[in-house]
Length: 101
Picture 1 (cartoon, rainbow, N blue to C red):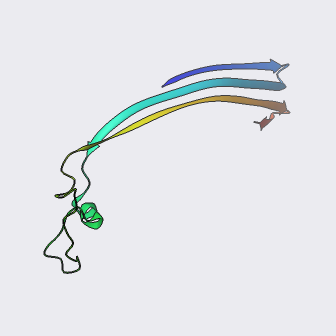
Picture 2 (spheres, rainbow, N blue to C red):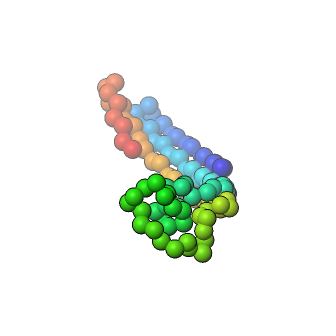
Picture 3 (cartoon, helix red, strand yellow):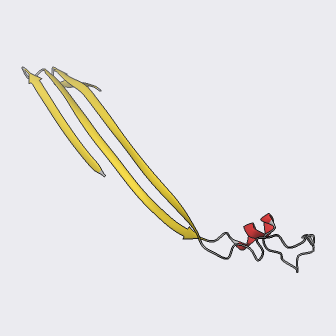
């Protein structure tokens, strides 16, 4: 994660202030994790059977039998950049301040 900000302001005769900011930020994440499919999901896909459950019909063994027995790896890469601009002002008349962004 990287971020750079520049801000500036200017006051005119203590009555009006103007300000602004410019920001650049970027993020980059690379991640991976290993997992096995849960047994319930494997049963729903027909990779495993639960012989004690009468709702599951007997089916021939699929070629992947006995189910998901080797860990799978999922990879995740995220990159994003943003540029932000902020402008605003303030006015002071008789001790009352008015802001505008």
